[in-house]
Image (cartoon, rainbow, N blue to C red; front, side):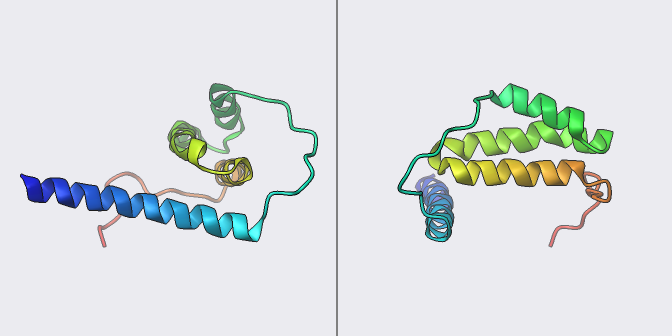
Length: 111
């Protein structure tokens, strides 16, 4: 049983290290400005999800919005706010893209 726990711990540590590298790379590319600009109006994750569902190009993309927002929300506390903003913009781009056709679940082969 100890071997499985060590394996799980290594996997968690590996994910944390990858997230840290991702954040470091982002901050190196876009350092925090020395001066603070006026912030944008606040909104909730539920409001974001509701708007993305409404803006989605297809019903299938609308159903993806909940999962995308949930995944972004889980890691948001660990990331710089501008990085979260970038992820929200990328989600919006995917959900508005009428040509984006996700694979139906179970149809993609495991590589």
